[in-house]
Length: 290
Ligand SMILES: Nc1ncnc2c1ncn2[C@@H]1O[C@H](COP(=O)(O)OP(=O)(O)OP(=O)(O)O)[C@@H](O)[C@H]1O
Ligand SMILES: [Mg+2]
Image (cartoon, rainbow, N blue to C red; front, side, top):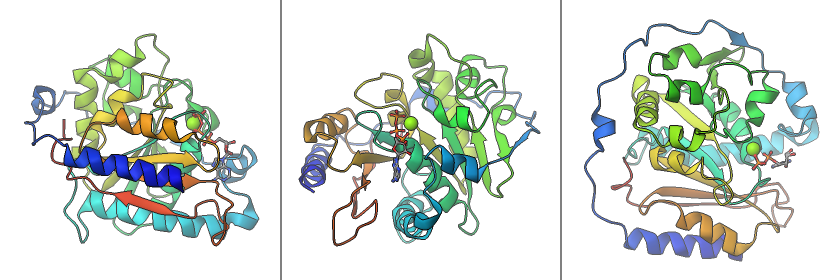
């Protein structure tokens, strides 16, 4: 627990130090690119057994327990996204699942959270493979050779809608990572990318957009995503992630950003599940809408 508690303290300190609200960036005010009428008609099947066999869904005997944990994790995220009982966060419907180092459970969390969130009334979910370094979601969903986030960020003539794939699970769509590009970091940090993400937020305010991502401390690609996401869910692997790594990862996030921490794969009592505590430290969110 000390990792989480120290991380929370660091977040509290950054909240106090948060700068006053900035104006929206010029990129955020740019007009929407044209060509948004073409919609992808491809429907991808989600093979739940296949996902279970590659370890991205819990084994059948743990399904209920894990589902209950994701119910708890999703609630504050949804409330902040949609302003249910709390002030909505700017771009709060864009949720980035992040971690300090590889293997902490980002992809597992993104997928399980997406499946849980799509069960909500009046909500749809777009799962985005924002891990352009290791696009595992795109691979396991059989969408690693189709256009996706990077292609749309690169080519203004490509519509966002044309890259979004519907799935055979009601309420769940998927945006693949797209074709690899040596300039992926620059593309993700580009003004065009900001336009794309702003569209994701605006197009359908009841749509929750969940970004899987690359580890913050080992890659540069995911830093641009932290700027555009309204909420960040930082996954910390129990008894494995060094405390300094968690604190360093938090240091890479802009001040005032809303960050939630989830302790993954804990086996500690009294809750013997994978998640035994979920702490959500809300910052004021005023300076993070760039
Ligand atoms: N809560 C969990 N319960 C069971 N297995 C889990 C859980 N979280 C993660 N795993 C397992 O741990 C491994 C790493 O998880 P995952 O691929 O989600 O990590 P990651 O943070 O996305 O890694 P990378 O940074 O390499 O993309 C996977 O094999 C996954 O099956
Ligand atoms: Mg991953």
